[in-house]
Length: 194
Image 1 (cartoon, rainbow, N blue to C red):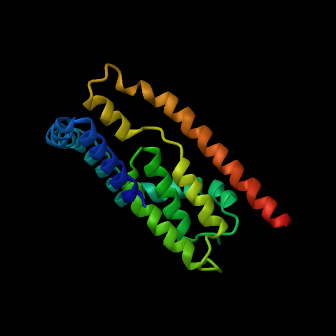
Image 2 (image 1 turned 120 degrees about the horizontal axis):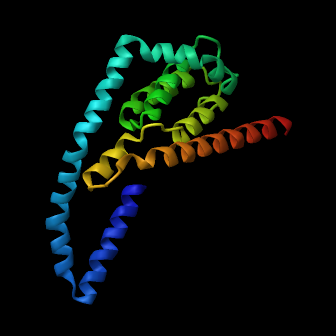
């Protein structure tokens, strides 16, 4: 669906440029922005590789499993329908840890594994379970302590103080997580009453 939206926007831009006689702008954009995109990607790649490597070391060393054990009491409250010591809890904790470090690319495999485990215990395979919905809320609106990608982008664009985004980011992601979880809890309780 998103690809159709992008195609439609690009097509509108080309048609508008054609009718206004500004096709030179389209040609310049095509030729120069590809290089800019590649330069940006190459400038943030080392930071993302570094943090992804750190997360891999944390996973291999068992640090993520220790983090999972640490947050297990909280996760068991957020996911009351999950059996204790379910594999999904470990993957959820690992996903949360990776997201806290701002590593969406490192969090994705853990998120997919968590959803796979949650689907295994889902009674209605065609409808997302409560645990799946709660995990999706946590994954989407999760607290980010170190927004790695944002920091990399700010550094790449020459920000004087790229880390000034950390505190506002923590506050914003904490508020979004809390709001999402409260809304999830409210909807879940309301459904049970119906």
